[in-house]
Length: 92
Image 1 (cartoon, rainbow, N blue to C red):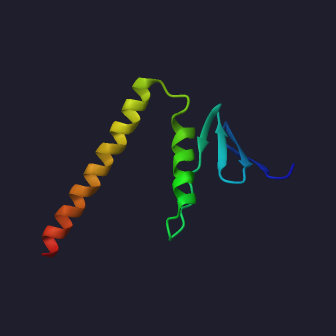
Image 2: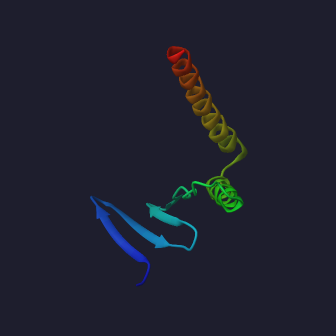
């Protein structure tokens, strides 16, 4: 079958499907969408890829799951910004 490969690791089997814009990996009934590849020029198409990726990640989430998802991302962002601030202060 073209575009489909089967990998077996222990009892978990992964089926990799090739899509034009992204790749979905099925693992025990859970669909995980691969992160989009962003061009160095960061174009409008990249923004569309990111939006599509986030939609696929969150489309089946409940409101509480979405809140937790975005809060987790926000905390990770703040942590990264604090690290960068500290690195800038050390360099100065």
